Length: 176
Image (cartoon, rainbow, N blue to C red; front, side, top):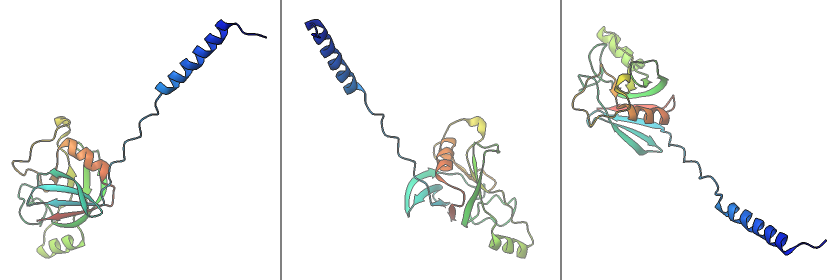
């Protein structure tokens, strides 16, 4: 069966159109790389910074506010001091008046023994946390004063990044 010139041209045009459309279809862009996961958190009380690090290299730094009495290690409940030492982030909580909170494993056995020798309660409930929920997604400029009861506070945008990068069990070192 012989085809007319018109049907040959029509088929050729269809083939060209399909080829052109195939050239316009692009593969989807690659997925963004997974954010780095921290294997250590270091809080430098003297510079009011929190660093996330992986394999010994800091990959993110955030300004922090500390306990209202920031100098020296926490001694007892209610002293307004932020602990010093090496602890762990042992769990995360969204059941807080703050945007998100990562619990620091203070007090450890040494803190409890010291407090017992002093005849005081070592305190607890130390967290790395954001600002109150009603502040919304905001990170303040570097803190002008320390205001927590001993916790480590960051902005609400920062705490989401920290939350995503710090798995439970990550060591946190709090230095003077």
